[in-house]
Structure formats: structure tokens, C-alpha cells
Image 1: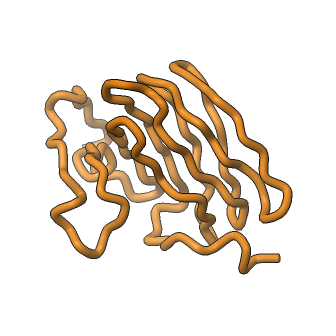
Image 2 (image 1 turned 120 degrees about the vertical axis):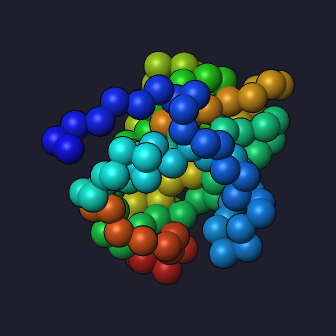
Length: 132
């Protein structure tokens, strides 16, 4: 099929804490898997108060983030040149390959971030401090 339409509620929510090989222990909806994406990844990440995706980088993948719900503290930039920003619903940010990024949920209920990444390769997180 050349196209596919799916509603968020029709995409199963996965608890990553049940999968040892995949940190962090957050819930996601793997939109990319349901739509059969081949060139990019698309996930909705769900956060409880205080949960975070630690500061990291990727060797190949460029990522675009969009806050759907909640307030987040972002750590962005290369090692030694990071900036901390607080953002809320409607905010976008991007992480280029080999540029550090991470975010922590500040809200008191559940927060959600849409993350798009390309290319669609398994690109495990790198320590940005090792890239200098």
C-alpha cells in the first residue's frame, strides 16, 4: 500500500521497562512499526514525573522532537557547550548526529513527546563527552 492512516489510540503502548535491552524504562507508541516506515523512526514517548532520557548522542541519526503534553527541561549541545532550556506543548527541537541531547519531564501528571529520527537505523546512544 502506498499510504496508511492510523490513530494514536490504535497503536499499542509498550512498557519498555519489560524489555531489558532497551533503556530507558518509559512507555512508547511505535508509530513507525504500525505504519511500516523504512526511512525514519516515529515514536511517542510517555513520561511520568521526573522521568528522563539521559544526555546522549547518535552517530548517524538526526532527531526531531515535538512536545505534545507537559513541561520538559532540555539539555542540548556538544559536550562542554550545553544549554538548558525549559519547553512546553508546541515546542520543537532537533538533535543532529553527534550532538548531545536529553530531556527530563517536569510536570506532575503524564507528559508526551513525539520523536522522529532518520535514517531508520538502530543507532545506540553515544556518550557526547567521548566525541570531543
